[in-house]
Length: 255
Ligand SMILES: Nc1ncnc2c1ncn2[C@@H]1O[C@H](COP(=O)(O)OP(=O)(O)OP(=O)(O)O)[C@@H](O)[C@H]1O
Image (cartoon, rainbow, N blue to C red; front, top):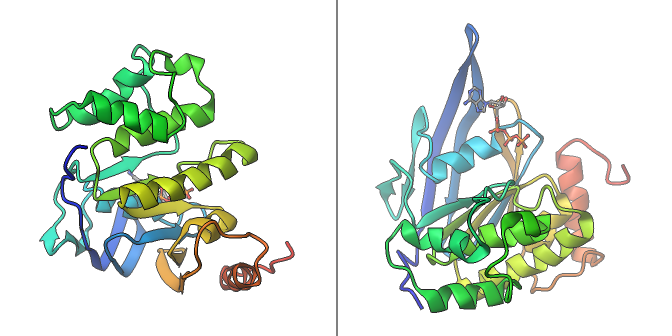
């Protein structure tokens, strides 16, 4: 097993505001976001489309800097991307000319310490044993996203940043992948930071749900979920939180 890059990271987002320039005006996107993510939490951010969730994730990943405020990992400002914090996007972005194994190997190439056994174990864990030599064009959408997850996880990142990773999958594959994500999180012990539009997905996965509203995006609610996994989507506890989130977002839960 490859040593973790930095197994425990506490992420502090402090007073973060950000705007983009759009044509001749400023578009405020984030306003005074304060959020602390403790090691090994699985935090899911929910909010309306376009409110700024991905912008916030990109900042935690070090792909963008906030205009105001700071984001730190264990007290150190995040200034650039780092292999200890890896992002998985909605599109798996695999290289079509490389096999499954070669795509997963790229995870190691960031750090130059390839480990064949770790790749085999990872492919096994993620349900792709026997597909080492398949090319992306020979995979289903769910399988391709599993490869992207395997590529992210072979490095044992401290923080796995998931930007709508299951958004393009059909609902049945999505349910399977939700269970797999929970199992991976338990096994690999990373801190999860995920964005989704799907309230049910957030309820099934998160240890904490953050609800944002636009515009500019600000945090309007937070729910701690102490229930064990696997969770039952029809449990009273989850249904209650679901209703509260719908109301917070200005909807009735029956529509
Ligand atoms: N590079 C950019 N330049 C200008 N505007 C941008 C840029 N990136 C994002 N935006 C704008 O910032 C706002 C927030 O975008 P962002 O992608 O963070 O939202 P989101 O909540 O993740 O959306 P969705 O849920 O639809 O993916 C949007 O209005 C978007 O148009």
